[in-house]
Image (cartoon, rainbow, N blue to C red; front, side):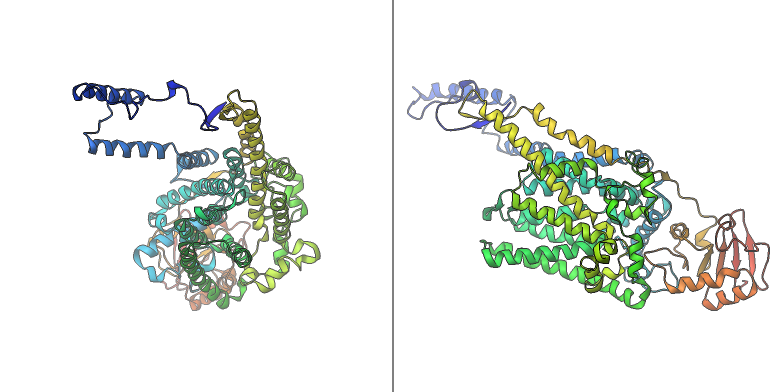
Length: 638
């Protein structure tokens, strides 16, 4: 058992644990006698501190250096240093063996991951060469503002500057991929600790959030995996305001610096992308309304620094969100096809059983739930299992918890509300009183394809419930140890081996978070991309356009191809014109549209809409160059 401190001031601690010093009224017999006594005393202090070489009072500079060293050692052993290190090591282990091939492979598939790798490369290239032209990429020619056709990953700009070619782009992407899991764990751990959970409960809840089985279906979506800043921002704001779920509001714990950091972290989350950022902004707005009402009725004593930090941080957050949102709104006005039909959203929305079905990528449950996934219309977005371990702990937390009954009631209500919203049009009455309200009245939600991603907040609430029960059990173990103590003057905690038992669910949570998703080596470009004369159209043009976009990192030639959150009408028209390629009518139509070069990849033709293409035909006035992997048609004939 652990002894922390005396329970009262009565009595004295054992002499072996203290250093005897002469009383004030005991003067030495002479000055000569006092010097050896002082020297002996200093030597004893150095020996007791297990540091015989510690400097005496005459070596002040060395003493300051040693104080700095001690401070660094304390920082190295602090809870947050250890938590950060653990989160990084755990992320590397859970994504193994990716760290061994960071610049060669990409996780999950060759679709969206290559698109987002290309997005990072374009972000870095534009910031290095032409920051003002960042919004118009070389993809989707001639459409303007094509950078905003999908999540921009703008928050990752500092690392994106390092993406200069295909290999470095893969390196940057994979480092960020691993880091998303580390930050999700650390952010959730910080939030749970701030709310009042103990270490074991916080670690289990953080792992359940970072490695929830439903996230395995999104291993190809870096923008969806990037959820750590959400919980981290909430933790910072709660800490800055001196508030915790367990202890309530503590005016003396207000920290304006944490408040500013929380607002900036929230803005950073939105800058990564609107896939998660949109709902997070509305959540922040809802929290602001609740906190504002609480202040009006309770009038807690806030310092002027807290008010100023909230004012400054809130303004910066709002202006940043409005700036980015205005850019996306301009694209929505220019491209009406960004809006999603309600029935289209229904196709991707989860059903009731979705919340207990794991995706195919789950090592633990994937094969067992294969039959259940057959009935789903779009399994990648409809397999929303948060983890059976988390569900069991959260259910237990309804009855045994460190959180109050009122708090648990609001958590359950929150789970129910987010469940209703996450089901989209598949909820009761076609979701008219849940998702339907957001779709009709909340700006931005009419462009959302996947309501199921709101399972993120269900996971957070269940993690809080789970941390509550483990914290209560840990407290109970300490209470038993304290009541059984021999020395009533001491505060006693349960032995470490007992406290270690509360970490046991962590193993089960991590087992449910293991993935079988493969790593792929992106294929090399079939020709020298930098030597092409743009605008270029690659055929076939379909879901494999993400590979074309990734290839264009070499030179960023203007390309009509592209893959994003929606397909602009211009690309649809070009694809239609090219159906008869390389016949003369199709060639003339593409010329009039502005296409100068067409590249056909014969190995892609079988099974595509261009499967009947006559690759032996050479149209009049077109220069044709054939290689082993591609056929290049120069429509200018020059």
